[in-house]
Each structure stands twice: as structure tokens, then as C-alpha cells.
Length: 265
Length: 287
Image 1 (cartoon, each protein chain N blue to C red):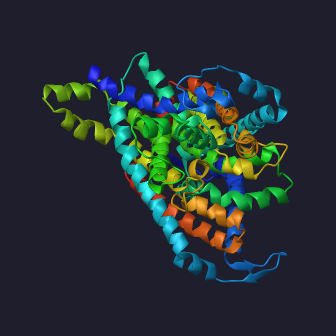
Image 2 (cartoon, chains in turn purple, red):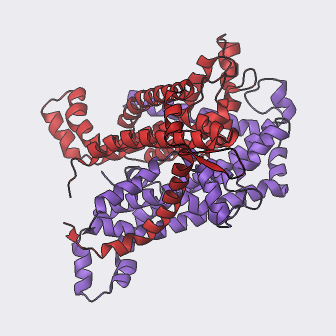
Image 3 (cartoon, chains in turn red, blue):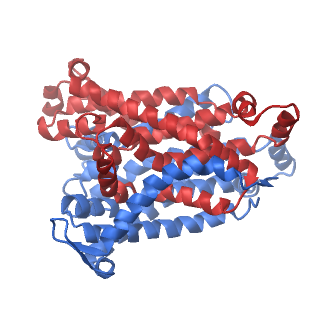
């Protein structure tokens, strides 16, 4: 048993090493970083974090990112719920083709969409707004949410629906008060994935914003190039981007494995 | 069983409208550009299939495509077996399970440009942990900005670090769904660990493994941000993968025609390979 647990321990150590290095860097002064190698911060400093929390360009980067990510998550899950219900319960003309077409959007390289998205959202006056990024990210999040929710809904026996109708429930009332509580875990997992993919995607988010809705990534790129390579600051900003993900994953930890399998195990 | 009901279309309508807006209009823009030539000033000339022919024949595209396939093949060959091994050796129940799962999922929740920066800081010679260890402790000459081999290894290791957990989590989900009775039966029959894996665990993991391979294929084939931030496609063109090349042409040189033609070829390749996986995946679960 001892020997077997060695593999996960080594694997997790491999995962944690670069993260440790990022966090360690964020507590070092620029001087210390450039003067040579040190495994632990010698002169422990919080300056990098103080800069981020006092400079509006920095902290607004985080607020912007979190705003469009939340907007996207709510939007994606809300439109995906009825669609997933339809796919899991009914057969209709072109259902399979539609499902596959939805999935193809998950396969499209984001780089392909960068320029047309820029033109599309500029022409409808949404360029540089939260809504633009939130809508653009539905391209890959809605298909994913439909896929996950459909997997979870399939696990709920159809008798539940039928019993509710016999008991005189209307469809909306049944859906909200009976069906939704039954797929709570699925909704949580779908929301988690939407949050995750919207949070980590940066190419489209950067292309669709300029000043008002600029994501944290754009702020970081600017620092990396203009401020003469302030590695400590960059590391601190990077460390802070890990935190929202770590928080949301804690909420779904018990369903995470099943969620990654899209409810299909 | 699912019942026939055409009214179900009303349920899919919002999704359809949203995705159509996001997918069809940009796609039409791309198709439009791909058959035209422009010299600026919004003047366009019909070009036919010229761009497609030019792209398909150009050495630059073929080289980028070759690098892309090599990268994706390496990724799948490393991440899938490694993911299976880690998933098999993980504890099945107890306090450590959620801790393991959360820690393993962590790399996937880091924004992609931060992943690139993080690995950049990690591998800097003299300053970074890995760069220092390889150069000054082991005496290996390693510099990602100068040597194509080092750059390739770094990009591949970075992706293994970033995405192997996806395979682990999927396989793990398949493994925990196996009832204990199966293992007890295997024990009574005196089955070797290999036959337990081959005849009990692997069949149970088949569906999730297909999802894992499909997702890993799609995402590694479309990868852009991480290698772009890490190496910028260099040294030279050695790590310029398809997406990086595409963005260079489209947003860097503003050659809209060739970029659009390349986008469509690129998308078609991704679609074709994914479709093969998808048909394999849904073959068994007929409605």
C-alpha cells in the first residue's frame, strides 16, 4: 500500500513545484530575484502585493475578469438548462446533428475567431464591455454546459417527470421545485466548468477589450513588457489569479471526478 | 426511453440563437475573407480558391502543421498513460481523496497566460528553480531561448504539467464506479493485477478515456496562449504551432485572405479528427 501511494505523491509534488516557485518569487524583492538563486525569500516582502492592491489598473483587472466570468457562467447555465432537458428527454428532428454541431464549437481554435469576433462586437457597439467577453465565451461554454447537464439529467429516471405531471404540477413549477434540486450537483459542476474555462481563456478576452473591461491578463502583459521585467510583481499577480479557481473548486470537490466525466460513468 | 416530441425545439432555441450568433456570423466573415484579396481601403477582389491552394502548398504552413501534429502526438503519448497510472494508484476513499483531487485540478484553473509566465519564471537560467537546477547543479546546458530542443521539451513538459490531471480525473471517475464485488470476484479467481486491469478496469474506463483523448486532442491541437507566452514561437520558428502562426499572419501581418483560408483548413482538420473520435465514442450508447 505504501509503495502505491508514492506515485500520487510524486505527481502532486511535480504539480506543486512551479506553483511554489511562483509564490516564492512573489515575496521576493526585484533585487533579490535578479541577484541570483535563492530557494526561499531571503528578505520577505509584501511590496508586490501592496502595489497590486493600491494601483487601480491592477485591481480593476481582477474586478473586470471576475465580472465577465460571472456573467458568462450565469448566462451559459441558464440557456443550457432547458436545452439539456430537451436532449435528455425527447427525440426531435435533427437532435443528433444539433448536438454534434454544438460540440464542434468546442473544437474551434480560439485563434480562428479572434479577428471576426473583434469586427462583430465592434459593429454592434459592444466592444470593450463585459457583455462582449461574456457572450464570446458562451461559444465554448454553452456546448460544454449542455453536454455536462445532459449527462447528469440522463441519470434522473423519467418516472419523476411523469409522477409530477400526474400530481398536477405545471412544467415550470416541476422544473424549478422538483427537477432542479435533483440535479443540483450537475448544475454546480456545469457552473464550475463555465467559470473555469472563462477564467483561463485569455486570447478572446484580450482581443475584445481595450480599457474599460480589460482583463487581468492584459494588465500582466503590459507589465511584463513595459515596466522593465518586474518579475516579483508579475509573480504576485499570477499568484492572485490562482485563488478564485482554488475557491470554486473547493465547493465542487465531491463531484469533481464525475463532473470531468461529463456525468457519463 | 426518450419520446418523440418536436416541441423540444423550443427548449433548444435560446442555445441555438446564442451559438449561431457567435459561430455562424464569424464563420461567414472568415469564409468571405478567404476567397477575396484586399489592398486596404475596404476594396475587395474575388480571389476564388487561390488562397487555399497557396496555403496548402506553402512550406511555412506544412512546417507548422507538422510541428502541431508532433506536439499533439507527444502530448497524447505521455499524458494518457501517465494519467492512467496516477489514477490507478490513487486512494479510492478516505480523507486524502478530496485533497488529492483539488490539488491535481489546480493547474487547470490557472489562466493560460499565467501558466506561460509561471513556466518562464520557473525555467530561467540562474534565477529559476528548474533552470538553476539543470544548469548549475546537474551541469546540463539548458537555455530555452537559444536551443530548440530545450524549448520543445519545456513546452511539452509544461503541457503535461497543465493537463495530465484531466486524464487522471476522468479515469478516476471511471475507476470509482466499479463495484467492489468485481474485485472480490477477481481475487477469488486468483486474477493477476494485469488481468484485473485488462478485463475489469480498462473496459470500465473506456468511455471516459475516449472523452479524455477527445478533449486532449482538441485542446492541444488548438493550443495558443501558453507556448506563445513561454517561447513566443521561438527560438526561430521551432515552437511556432499552428495557432501561433495563424495569429502572426492574421493580427501581425494583417493578411486577411491567407489567414482566413488557413483558419478554415485548420478548423476542418480539427473537425475531421474530432468527428472520428466522436463516432467511436457514441457508437456504443445508442438511444
